[in-house]
Length: 382
Image (cartoon, rainbow, N blue to C red; front, top):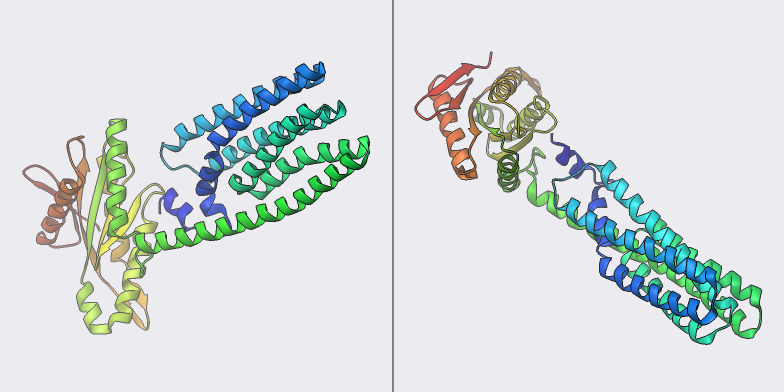
């Protein structure tokens, strides 16, 4: 089972859809840029109108933090275009966004609270308008509650505290309105998050059903073809090769005819498990139809090691299967082809491996044959 397949198979909680959730979070780059511009304008005007050095310092710090957030978003986009990553790396990106968002929110909250001290109505209007726009962006775009709610409170609590400190009916009303807004916004954030998570999980479940074989839970032919194209691109970029193994079960049809489809299905599932177990973590195994399977070995694995892995698969399948009250013995034949040229396509590589498989069957089954231009190299699994 590949590392990617292990990730995909984890449908518990939000772990499996973390990449999609982070794409939504980091997709807020235009909003982050606009808010930063507004923050710089409002902070500069407030600092100039009041002559307060503390407001100027907050504006400078917040502007620098905002620029850092933009840089992180751009870096994430470049990183996202690379190969699929492990869960731990996604978590690091989530923390990076979270920390940047919290610091910027604290700067905005401090700017809004400090501006209220001077009771400059024009500066108050500018800063509070910016604050409301920021709230809207958080509620709509940040679908991670622990990030969004903390950002919201970091802006609102200083404003509420300062309004209550200043007193007066208008400021008391402002504190009340901000508190009511916070309650409603938190409820909306939680609702949006739950709705988005449910939708993404449903989409992922449908995607898994479409790309995996319902009987063996292995990837199906469509997913195999997708993975082949990815492997060819990766091998071409790295200047390395990889091996493709195509195998058929020997003697499956007589077992299916003798013991029935229930035992036949169990035999297919058990064979798929043995194939999967015999492979390195980075390999990709698929059921491409009937009793035919295919394995894409990791890019960079040498031909000798791939051949040895193929032999291990055949040896595993050749062991007896205890199904029902019967000990059933079958075997498998395999063909191996190696991608060594950027001009070689997925269809050509599969045809080469299939021709090698056909040759293995002609040579007595329980063989693995390696495709060559004018000859085949065969070796029995046992």
